[in-house]
Length: 223
Image 1 (cartoon, helix red, strand yellow):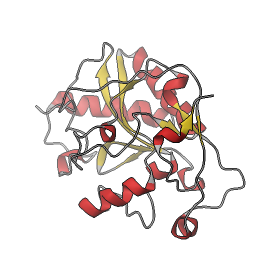
Image 2: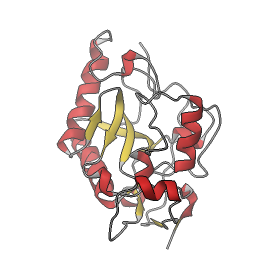
Image 3: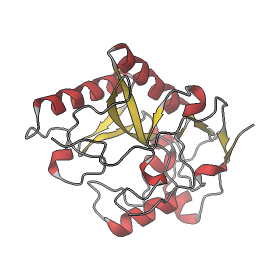
Image 4: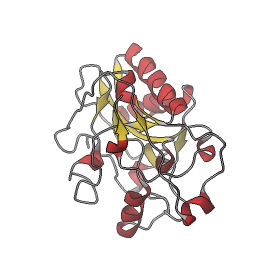
């Protein structure tokens, strides 16, 4: 049985303070692909809204498919509506004796380009020419954990680029399928849209209304 905890997690509990990210000017390519909005929402540090949120930000350390840390801070940044929906799913799971473990949230567009260079497969990595929902602060990669933070059976590790990561995969232990469905149900009830090829990936509704961004994660300054 494979565990989503393929390495010892690095859990970051960030200070309880709402933080916002500045929006960098879009490049010509970004401007062409981004949806025009009158008011661009700031990114919110979700752990500032709930300091008990369990973070294991995979791209802030070298244990990922790129083989190196590509984030300058281990933070979960999202647009406000997505942040609220993530915590709604967290509350639902806690009532059932589980909790979320967060692997990825907002992702700079420059990191997306590096991912595409290594794995140019749109089933698993969004083409940076169009941008990812992560680049808009409107998508998350999440897993499930027990209430005490210990591992539970899950279909695959994070960023497993095989058919077993597909949401309809059946050649898996029954417990892993049950936990996948439990996670999907809680996220869907909070309005998240599941990605068919990655059981851990969910998009916020209205993601297309948010522009692409390329700010470093550390650019969200504490007040």
